[in-house]
Picture 1 (cartoon, rainbow, N blue to C red):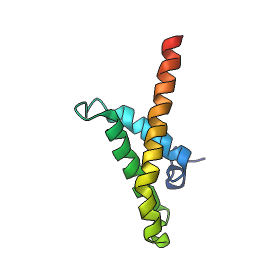
Picture 2 (cartoon, rainbow, N blue to C red):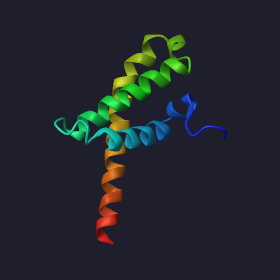
Picture 3 (cartoon, rainbow, N blue to C red):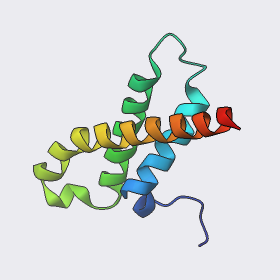
Picture 4 (tube, rainbow, N blue to C red):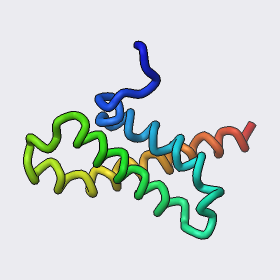
Length: 93
């Protein structure tokens, strides 16, 4: 693997969740007036939209683009849940 992230990786569920979680934690203090869940959703939407375009999703037509906002909900909720689980485990120890 010659890259940390690739567009193909970010277009997968695991890659999008990882990217969303990392970027959300990086920018949430800068956007402290906006709820973190909304920040996470917008980041997931951007990641999936750009990854879809970069990996040829435009060739799939409107069907691929209609699913991006719905998939962003799943990615955002998974990223938020993963972070909560990690902090809960850390607090228990």
